[in-house]
Length: 247
Image (cartoon, rainbow, N blue to C red; front, top):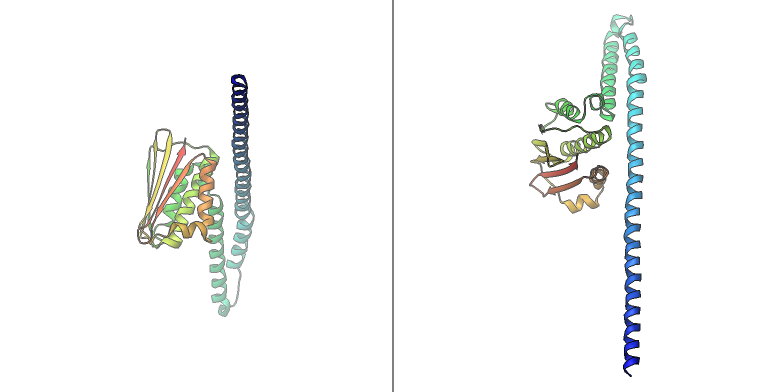
C-alpha cells in the first residue's frame, strides 16, 4: 500500500511538473510573440514615418525649386507689362496676388521641411518657428532651452514634429494667451515640458474622438525615439505635456 501511494504521489508530482513546464513554455512563447509583434509594429510605424518625411522633403523641394521660380518669373513679367492707364489697378492687383501666392508657397515649403532644421538642428528650427508665429497669433509662445543636446537627424525631426503639433493644437483649439516650452537635459534624458493657460479638455474625449489622431501621432513619434509622453489637461485648467527622450 505504501509503495502504491508513493508511486501515485510521484506520478502526480511528475504530471504537475510537466504541466508547469508546459505552462512556462507557453507563457515564454506568448511573451516572445508579443515582443515580436511590438517590434514588427515599430518597424512598420518607422517605415511609414520615414516615407512621410521623405515625401515632405520632396514636396518642399518641388515647391521651392520648381514652382517658386516659375511664379517669380510670372510675377516679374506681369509687373513689367505695359497697359493702358485704366488697366493699371488690375495689373497692380494681379501683381499683389502673385506676391501673396509666392509668400504662401514659401510658408508651405517651410512648414513641410524647414531648412533651418536640416542645417542647424531642432533648437534653432523651433526658435525660428516661434519667432515667425509670435505677433501674428493671439497666443504668446516662449521657449526656454537649458543644457541643449545634439540629436541625430531622425530624432531631431521627430522632436520638431512633436512640438510643431503641440503648438498647432494650442493655437487652433486651446484659446490660450500663452504657451511656455522648456527643454532641458538631465540624467541622459531630454525633458520637454509644454504648458498653456488655455481652456483645456477632457482627455477621454480627445483620445476617442476625431482629434485623437494628433495625440496618437505624438505618442507614436515618442515611441519611435524610445521615449514617453504624459498628458495632463482638464477643462478650464489648461494643458501640460511632459516628454522624456533618451539621449
